[in-house]
Amino acid sequence: MTEGVKEIFGPRENGKDNGSGGGSGVAPPAPAALAAKVRTLAPSMTRSMQRVAEAVAGDPAGCAALTVTGLAELTGTSEATVVRTARLLGYPGYRDLRLALAGLAAQQQSGRAPTITTDISVDDPIADVVAKLAHDERQTLADTAAGLDTAQLGAAVSALAGARRTDVYGIGASGLVAQDLTQKLLRIGLIAHAHSDPHLAVTNAVQLRAGDVAIAITHSGATEDVIEPLRVAFERGATTVAVTGRPGSSVTRYADHVLTTSTSRESELRPAAMSSRTSQLLVVDCLFVGVAQRTYEAAAPALAASYEALAHRHRSSPR
Image (cartoon, rainbow, N blue to C red; front, side, top):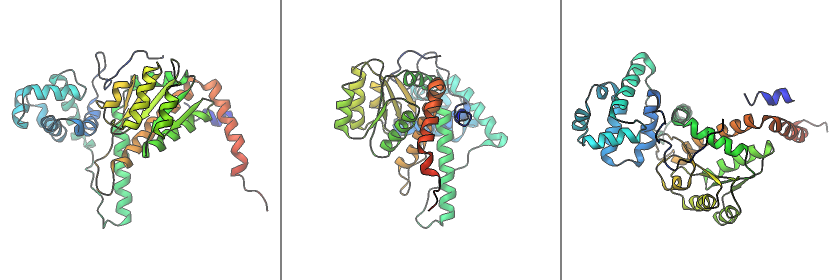
């Protein structure tokens, strides 16, 4: 049984990051991550910054050939706006963004350009719905993986692996993801609780202290019922983690570590909650596997025991 468990699993990071995780010493995103960053961050940008971001994502080769002044003129913005956009996307300056654009253009010219996502129409055949949803799910997962800060992820894993107790907050679809994470942690012998009731979340957060972990899952980063318990946990000294699609949102003010998710473009028949759940589940799985690796000596027997305890429910019994 242990060998089967081992197949599931294949230095602690310190310091706080109450922003997007893009402080000094953080490497800029690779060219492949640029389009993902634009899709993730564009909704929270000013309109002028959105024009710059859309231009570089839409025509990386053309924009790579432009000076900062040229790109400002092309987008009807200012040089300062171009530089601010580059920094928001994770690059120290415009020169670094141009290098990434050149790299992205080279990838696209080699035949690796992304497919354009098509919205689902009310009269689409079911086969088209399946194909479009599958495409969007793949793109969402790829974007999330490309934009995920592995240093922040590693720090969160270290905190979870050594935590006395973990509380996870989420409302609605994010609440389902919170339950998924706690169920996984419980199966490897860790103490974890999911809270979707805002009153219970706060009353439990009050009991947290240094050595505990609190995780807030919110795509918008503005859900007050999730932000409030995270703030309480933060003030009590617990290590706090935000899983959000908006790295500059309110929830990150109380987060030691920020894990950014991505979503596909929202449409009438595909609300943001659907694609955000997909990316959140990927982050949750990364956290779980990382913790299971760090605690393998205890996690493997615990997981094996849970399999054994439930095995009789999956066997067909003679009647």
